[in-house]
Amino acid sequence: MKLNMGKKQKGLSLLELLIALAVFAIFITPMLTGLYAASVTAIGNAKERTLASYIAQNHLAELQLKEEWPAVGRKQGEVEYAGQEWRWEQQVENTADENMRRVTVVILMGEQGSYAMIGFVGKQEKG
Image (tube, rainbow, N blue to C red; front, top):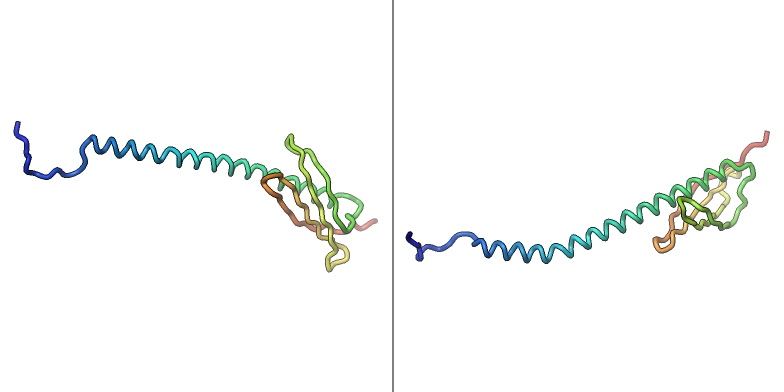
C-alpha cells in the first residue's frame, strides 16, 4: 500500500466534518428553541385576538338587535366567553346621519393589549 505524501488533500476529513456538525448543532439548538417559543406565543396571541373579535362582533350585533337605541357616551362592562372573563368598553357617537350612530367597541385583553372594532347602529323605525 502506497501513501501519496506529496499530493494535497481535497475536501474535508471525516473528523473535520464531524466537528463541524457538532459545532453547528450546538449553535442551532438555542435558535430553534427560541423560534419554537416565539411561535407558541404567536399562536396564543392569535387565539386571544380571534376571541376578542368574536366578542366585539357579538356586542355590536346585540346593539343592532335591541329595540332601544344606544345612548351617546361611554359604557364599560364584562362578559364571560370561552371560559374567560373579558372587559369591554363602548363609545357611541353621533354621525352626520341623524338615524345612525357610530359605535367603537374595545375588548381589553390584559397583557396582549386591546382589540377595537367600529360598527354602526341604525335607529329602528317604530311601526
